[in-house]
Picture (cartoon, rainbow, N blue to C red):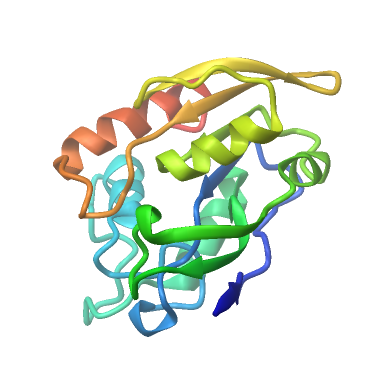
Length: 190
């Protein structure tokens, strides 16, 4: 069965950074109707830790869901856009693992960048997302936690390869946060 992306791209017009994952987890694992919705994913804990010195900053008081409104307001203020590199997939197993996602329709990355005239960088949060970007843009593959420059139309941008925020990726939250800190500082967001 082909699954189409359930969310629209989140594209603040002044965004400096476009973060791209592969595809959302099955909706039964969502705690909110936004990107990185699974409570077992550490993306919003990484953001809370880095920007507010509190990994639980974006959790609701009951700790059973993330606060979508606080996340959207924060991302809008900072100029961080979000989407995924696939708009349609076939899930080969009932989970969000990249290795069990068959991309049926990749996202048009060039179209996203055209909608973000102030964008200075793309960050991928996994190997599948990085591979899809590289299939559409001429850019070297960065090592995890690093970046590579590339050109898009008349702009010079960076591609950052971040560690996955999934807990299935065997790296402590602090170590993952260190890579994200490098990127946010490099872009003047932190």
